[in-house]
Length: 279
Ligand code: AMP
Image (cartoon, rainbow, N blue to C red):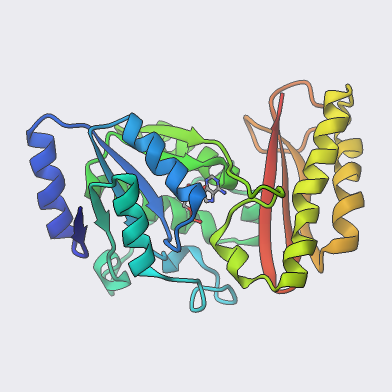
């Protein structure tokens, strides 16, 4: 497995592969890898000849009061997991390798990124879009795999790729959960034992909403209420519980088209997100 920290060195690796006619898949991550990330790498493996995992805690997608400094990192463990899953190259740049001191070019998606997390994290998706486009360009990838854990992110990236005619195929991968329902996340490391128990309210709320939906309920307000009944007693604060049209990420009152039920809530100081696709 190649391990590259400079744009020049990963470019050499991927250029060789391209010249040999091989197809490249990229899996962008912020590291502290878990089974959710590994599932993406396995899907990448099935859809390309070569797999690049990028490990980069992207400073431009964190707001000034967010957890950039304390974001969990364990590069040695990440390298071992990538090796085990058959990744061909890791790209792990320092921030200075990605952002020149006078960096001044940004990608902003202006519709899907306005609601849900975008409403609470104003610069987040500008940072995500910009870094993903850079990573696509750096790795010369034909395919990129994103998890539905970050459903809005995957949809925003798909929109960017369509709107800017970026020659890459985006694959959305299923959300991976712990056996007890908690969505896998690097940020779960922040949770104390007591908070870990309370965090189960997110997935429990979504399951309650899914059961109502399966029984025929189509009113967004009723599905929201089903989530809030579980979430309100457990969360320290709730950013949103929203039912959005999947195509627009705008609120729907009645689910008569594919929809996304999405949650962001704080358990202690940890902001967790979870979601469910409906229809
Ligand atoms: P992150 O390292 O949190 O930025 O995530 C990198 C990629 O892994 C994103 O495409 C995420 O959506 C995906 N991912 C993270 N957690 C999960 C999960 N539990 N299930 C599926 N994909 C995930």
